[in-house]
Image (spheres, rainbow, N blue to C red):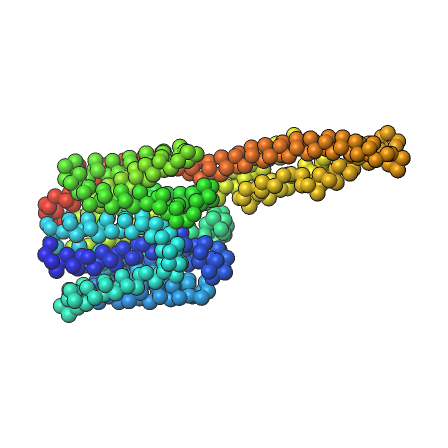
Length: 578
């Protein structure tokens, strides 16, 4: 590529980076935003949900819109809209404005993403565009993986508002490059009508599907609302496919799905994103809730994923050249499967080396996949097919992320409920063995249940306070007097002191024994609860392992050699290539 082409690809990479970064950067800042805006987490979650839903719904229609009216102009417009949304989000004073800002951001992102991919890839001829595709593809994966890390650093040192405002100066750089390098007058446009019916059906399908996946856990997977959304998504999808086959100007050219390599790329895009996001969402939460690490530390501990993605993705083209796409994708999924297995058996009792190495393994697997898959999905498509391929792959990656959240967060919620129930049963069994009154035993059970439910450690205060100890001494002293039928007034001072000392010593011994027993039981309960909670998190990866392993066989949908990397002419127009 010449200097002009490299500059354009760099400008497109900025847009892609910001679009994909904002799918994950906000997650780590949620506690700070919740505190800053004084809103419930349920309301705040819509600031996350709306970005995902809008991005998924509008990416394909806006990609087609850019084909019809000029990709360069539409791309610049998308950058401006994204910037406006970022400013509104960063300056918002309540949840409503934050959600509005995120929605506007996502509208901009759904314009920027498909247009940037198509513009960047189109900078070089079919025979020479592999480098551009690799850069753009790596940028996608790296941005999504870096989101929690960048979010943690920015939130820690600049405040949560800069999670959004940091986009603005970066966008200005992209705008300046676009205005100086892109051709806005002579750019090619597709001479066709906008498929409004297809657009509406695709948007209805994606809206219903993503909303159902996002809210299934909260509304109930068997609820009428979620069932209705799934029914709507299925019906609208069937109507959409039928319509696209019949119309003269389809929004998505169905010829895409005649190519086996594109179908393999689509499945790979969904599943690789699913297994990546499953770690990027769950693992920081595990580190903060179970290991009591700060958000920044948690983000830094999963940074090896991003680092290895950055290292592996650019050089994996050589691996594809030597060994072929089939073997490369197989190795990538195998590495991700082994990472899931290692996460399942994660031991963080001593140090975090296993976690760091496992994150590196996941990053290697994802990096091996994310670079080639963008090239393989683009194949040697041009024009409408190229735009459609990138729009579809972009949406499928979003669906992979949504699926990861729906599956793993729902699974985690169920697991945590079971873990708390098992911990409460264990706590009751341990407390029942304490040699204390029924009232004190019930109070200890209530305290343990509350600590387990609120996920907090019990205080180190002794079970029997000094005030209660004095009360017990007084009660025991009067009990001794009553048992011996002694009137306290008849006792001489030395006798009274001796009896008081004897009773005090006896009570103190009992109090110490009770406090030691309670402390020991409390330690057992806390350790058991932590083990149960750890199992609740990590068992998810045990379930994911066989599915990740099975994903390796998607590689057999690809040709033995890297068809997208070796520059040969396809028999596209004959329709014989599969």
